[in-house]
Image 1 (cartoon, helix red, strand yellow):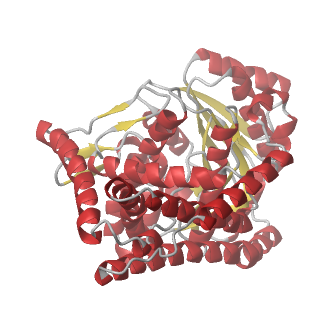
Image 2 (image 1 turned 45 degrees about the vertical axis):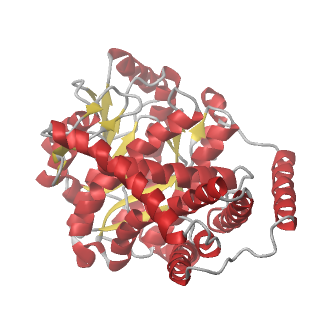
Length: 516
C-alpha cells in the first residue's frame, strides 16, 4: 500500500493474514496432494477413443501454452520493456499544459469522500499542472464534504473545482454532462483528461508519473494503472479481490507489450484530450449501443470503461498499462453472501466484456493488432474449455466410480497451486487461498459468461438502481435467451458424455486449462 495506509478513516479496509496462516495453508495443500497422489489408481489414462484424447490434448496444450505465454510476456514487459519506457518518460519530464479530472460518485460515505478528494488535491498539487476538477455529485451532502475538504486543505494554485449535480439518469449521463462542460472550457490540444471513480484513492505520485508517460509519447492515446483494492470484508472477500487484481496485473502487462489493452479501467484511466473531446467519444459515453441479430438494439447501460476503450481502439490509438503506478479502489461486496455477490459482480463485468467482444473482433486484426485480436477470440473459447473438465468429472463419478472425482481433484489442486505460484513471479502477490479462489472464479465465471452471452440485454449496476432490458428487445428475444442458455448447457453435457464415452479420463483432464 502507499500512504493511504496512514489514513485512519480507512482502517476498516486494510487487512493482512498472519504469516503463520500462510504457512499452514501451503502445508495443508502439500498434505492433501500427497494423500491424493498416494491413493490414485495405477492407470489414469484409459485407452479407447483416440480422437477424443487427441482433441482434448490439443485443447490442453492451447490453454496452458496460452497461460504460459501471458506470464512470460508479462515478465518481459515489467523487467525489460517498461523500465526503458519509464526512464524515457522521466527524463523527458513533459507535463501537459492543463489537466482535467472527471470524478463521479454515488452515495459515498462522507469519510471516504473526504479521503478521496484530499488525495486527489494532493496529487494535483504534486503534479504542478493547472487543473479543472469536475465533481459529479449525487446530493448536497457530497458538495458539503468537498467544501469542508477545501477549507482544511487549500486548493492548489491554478486549480478550479466545478460541482456538477447528477441528473439521476445514471453514471453515463453524468459523465457525458461533465465531458461537455470540459469541452466548453476549450482545453488545449496537449491537455490530458483523468476519468476516475469517486471511491478510488490515488497513490503517491500517481498523477505526475502517469502524465509524464502520456507526455513523452504522442502515439499513446490512453493509459491505465495497477489497482490495489482496499476491502472492508473478511479474508475470503479480500483475497478474492486481490487475486482478481493480481491476474489483471499480469494480463495487462502482457497486453501492453503489444501496446493494446482489453479495457481502460473506469477506476482510473488517463486520456489525451484530443481523443476524449471527439464527438464519437462523448456520444459513446452518453448513449453507446450494439446491434444484435436476435436481440436488436442493445443500449449500453453499464461498461462505460469498455465504451471509452472501444473508441480508443477503433481510432487506432495505442494504450498502455503502467505497472509502477498504483491506485486504491475501495471495494465493498454487494449484499447477499459471497457466492451471490461475486456472481452479481461477474455478471456485470463479463456482460460488459461479451457485449464489446463482437464489435471489437469486427475491427479485424490490423486495427486491433494480431495479439489482441487472438485474445478476443480466446475470450470466447475459454468459456467452454474451462467447463469441460468439471462436466466430465461429475458425469464419470455419477455413472461409474467416485475415483474420477479423486483424480480430478488432484489435477485441479496441483495445477492451481502451480499457477498461483507462477502468478506471484509476475505480480509479487501470493496467498494460500488463491488456488481455491482461482478455481471458483474460473468455473463460476465461465458459467456466468455462458449465461450473459445469451442475455446481452440484461444489465444492472451492483449499487445503483439503473439497468434492465435492451431498448428494442422483443418478447421472443427475451424468451429465446433462456432457451439458448438451457440448450447450450444441455449440449455441453451431452457432447462430453457422448464423445468421451464417459470413460476417457486422461485427455479431458489435461484439457482443463487456466482461463482468464
